[in-house]
Image (cartoon, rainbow, N blue to C red; front, side, top):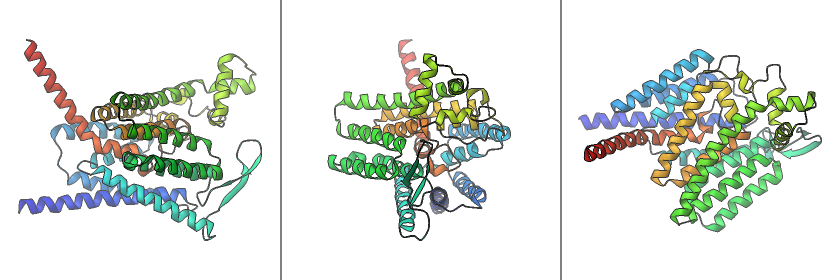
Length: 401
């Protein structure tokens, strides 16, 4: 009888979790389409409750409950400071991911996202719904025609191609043949010719190269090199973003104060490489997004929209939540390195590098950020590893004594 109850509650928990994930993926697809969802906020509350149901019907250890409590306390403080509920939603989702086969879950996310993107593109090219292309000035000094295929902006189209590609590499990269990697690259080149979105394409090219080496480079030193490169790229992407936010004012000095010092010229060139993304930070009254507008837990006024995801993370949610998240990701990467999960490191690095220029994964949508799924599938194992390491250290001390 007890086993029957456990099985029943386990089914409720899993159905609740997967229902929440399905809704979150649909919200991402609706956001990328030409349709504007008028009840998005209410739907977020529904998915929050679904993940909360999963937590209620899941067994946790005392250490896991303590971790959930501490992170929820951080989420509550963030909500009180900013009025934003994203942090608490993320924490509940990650906590609810215990006992979920995350590879299976991400496969569902992959196929739903892929199918949804195909439907959006089909509706646009058949003239049913959404524009095929847009002709306008994209900030490059001339009128251009670039393809959107129902997704509102060429960058959004290339972004979804990037998202499907990197997730597919994580799920199937180890089993793919060399020519399949070539086909994936050609597909991305084809979309790049339609969208001319350089950032998404370059990061995708980087991810394809890393995934290929991680899967095919069988030498231990080679795999360790790939893992190290992935960790370095992730940490470096955060560091570069912080430096940009601290020096964005130099673009203002270059344009309005005619400062031509070497360091100002350096950031001016970097701004050009990032297609004017740094300048956006200083083209407002308060220089929103720059480090002088950051605070420990942010504030309700910090709601300015711009690209550059890592900068947005610290600006929207505060320095402390940002540091906690980055530390959690670094801990996860070290955990993956020990587990020899090089594809997870590759996916994380691709997300992190993309986050320098774009803010696709720093948003209201949980299903945009595959890091949440990876962290959700690993956090219990990460806690257990800490316990095992403590026991090993105690044994060593006892032996040495």
